Image (tube, rainbow, N blue to C red; front, top):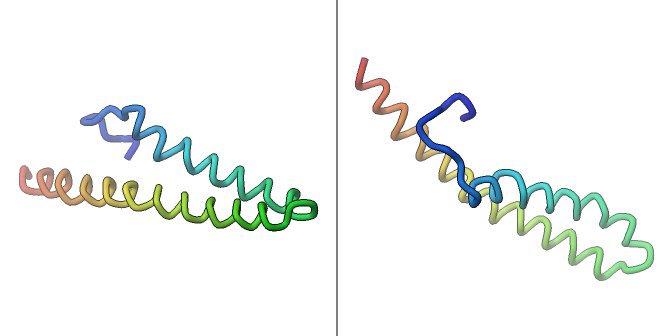
Length: 79
């Protein structure tokens, strides 16, 4: 995807492809340390991080598959 030059990523793209996944993984990394003193809150953090990764992954997969279907289809028909 980095090789394409047709589309320039916007703020929303950077947020969904980099910002939110980094936040979710940071929450997963910190949760075990918080589990000793705040067990219930740590479990909610793990669950929310998993849901965040799920909801962030759906648009990412949709964008990637749509790009490959429509751009690769046009490239192969041009040849």
